[in-house]
Length: 158
Figure (cartoon, rainbow, N blue to C red):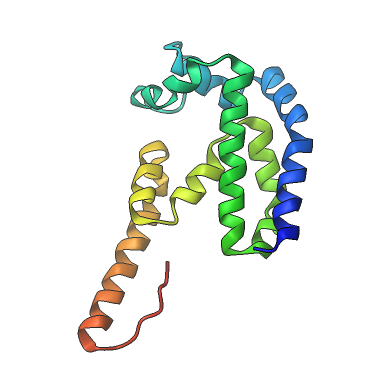
């Protein structure tokens, strides 16, 4: 990834942070729900299973703003990692990433996890519809294995 794209993501993320923090406090969506679940407080609109509260316990142990900063940094790192694969896609995906950062969603981290077979299993634990990536990895593995048995070269699909 070019230094220009990296700088674009980092500068934009730093500039967007105060807005995101204010919106998370105002709306009380995603991050606030994760943070409360990490403290053992469940809201009626909690859409994830209660077993995920254990994952958010470290965030719940931190003050709200600090916990949000940690999640925000993880999402920015995921954006940078995805941008490493496709700088053009990283720039084109600016709006969806900024929206995820604004709401404190874990979507960028889950997208990064879906790049590997084990990671896609973890992502599917959070959002079951992401099991489609587990299936795609299994299909890609099968195709590579069959081609290898035939002695054919197979590009790394995923």
